Length: 386
Ligand code: FES
Ligand SMILES: [Fe+2]
Image 1: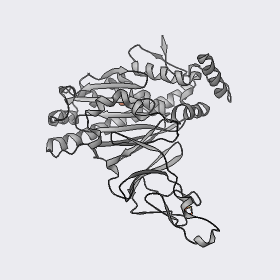
Image 2: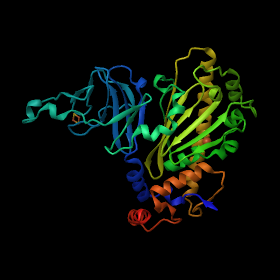
Image 3: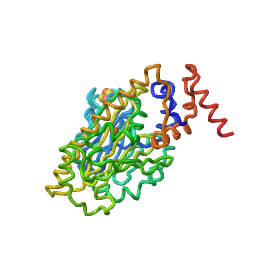
Image 4: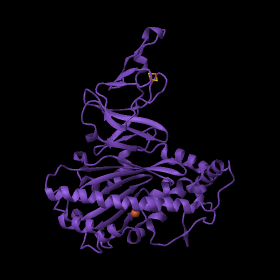
């Protein structure tokens, strides 16, 4: 019988530091879409594993990414998550100011800093890449190639014309008391939809399931069909969803979800698309962050479908947050070490297999002694390679 990942890997600080090194260090992270920062001075800030970054549109119209850290005394420069700083970024601590292309422009009492050249104290660039309009920051020079990483889903993403979408809702960030893997597990757990999401299950009329699972990509899909149950939102969405000219028949009624290992998701609906991330904070906490986008379409039926979709997904999101935090809590009870997985729990099986590949110490049912997890994992990796 197959067994799940052991509970200890969902709440162990040492294991979490391994994940940072072996899983997240070189994985690009999505910050926003080009269309989120259309005007000079528009920016979006992003924090990932205690590194504070922002992406910005410069006066020349370019996109740049910088550490959100002043070169003087390291104060955070841009305090809001999103905004427009005009052509100057002014540090709130001692008012050093930078151009929106990162050059240090003004230092109060400059004459007091013997021999200092402002040219040496511009903001520190963060490498980034743009994929289908989405801006990804890449904190390490040996980061994975985004094109390779997302290539298994690129053709299907193409259908949704992502470079042309614009934001249609506020950026959403939900802190959740759960390890990031509990978020990912829940996302690719197709079985719970029938039980724990009555509205969504009614909308997708029991068609929801996992349709593909490769090493890095999990694909889940359901079709909007005659509505089951009595969800008014689902019924109204079903009735008003118009034809979507750019999508093939197969995708006209499809609610399609991808999880790309480890923590990036795309939720693709006929009427709109979302990116979603489970951002690890520490071994017990994550931030669920998502953005909602769509192609310009003024048809009243489309506008209504989009609002209903958002309302339906708020319901689903609340249900999922409660599920995820309940599972986290359960796993922290010493009675639970690991549970059985059915052959039909394809997502959970695949995700566990992927984690075991990268961090073989996660095959241990019980946590190794404190201080030994790192060395044991190294030894297990070495014996795998031998
Ligand atoms: S820390 Fe930014 S001006 Fe001093
Ligand atoms: Fe769910």
